[in-house]
Image (cartoon, rainbow, N blue to C red; front, side, top):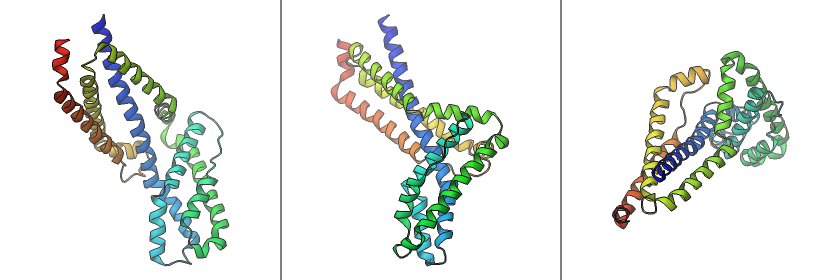
Length: 263
């Protein structure tokens, strides 16, 4: 019975590691990819069209780069995606309110000499264009992709939900506490194995996304994507393998396996 509990706790710990990791990575992939491939291009294009006759080409290029890499552009993208999910998948009627983010984005990028003259009209123009873009995508989403897309949106929303992550963290914590009491010297080994398995599965998912990138682009993104942003996934894979290696070295240095065999 005790051995069975240890196995269950070890499996649950590994699953919670995997699910938390995938939750964070998938949200990052979706938001960053949608931002860099679609929305940041539209935002920078709308912004530059308002000031293109008043600034030189070097300044335009700098502003475009800053907007496409701005944290406010990421926030707008995140709100964009969440609004679509709520309105399309859950049939709600949420307004796409990004006035605060637009204000901050314009304040950060509008040339000082144009600020007083163009700030008001640029804010209105950007807000109108982006709200219209969101509404248009809502209207076309199901028509273009079919009802199965609602299931995908709902699963994505559940998977990135803060309560889902808290639940996984609680399971992880409970498992570690349980293993501390039952596997005093073997705990680091269990965490090391869990981390290694998580790294391997993350790597497998990375390879699958790379292999299926064309399918994802055509079937889920309508051919809009030229590149899927997987930088956070690569970072997680490296960190997970390093944690696993670090725990292995600590175990050998402290000779915990020998202590476990003696106990």
